Image: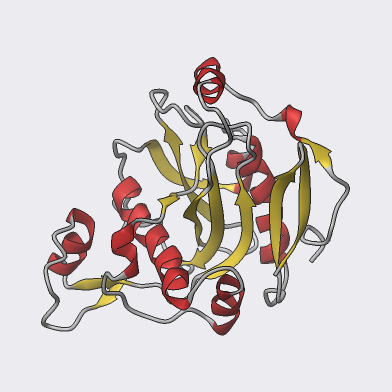
Length: 250
């Protein structure tokens, strides 16, 4: 994997921060602990030039405002025991479980399916058994009412990135890919989390306002989808003593 091999370190100072983000970080005595998160690159159409689901974060966000991102967010407690359909691929399972427990690995994958629905209105699910308990959670109960279970099958992990310590919010984010097939773009909608939600091809994405981390992961993704089969390891980016390190994981 070209992008996942150890690379020349780069200084963290190039990352763009808003005045609000700088102010919030100055109020902290030390760097916050990264929260586990997951995001998913959903594609449709020709795998060589797919359309990708993205949306724009509101300008009111205090973390990465106004930029376009893939659906995703932090892992919630309910993701660890919510019902789901499908199984992780052996490769994705092995990579995730090199860092977390099997239960947490499933929760990480499930969270990006949940977040996709919350942020874009797109349900990725499979037929559910007749009896599913009420989770008392708006998202999981929306799947239940639709007769579906969130489906974690066909998710392949391809990257991991830990937010550097000079930000006031930090995430240990896992990046997944799922191809929905050569189909018409499924209907999606805006939410309080993402605006201007839509399906964009690779050329269109280059015209969008993106954060440095998203640009980096787009490059990793392009390399990943060009390969006939995923490599055993994934791309891993983190900051060590003020310097970005890009290496393979596990």
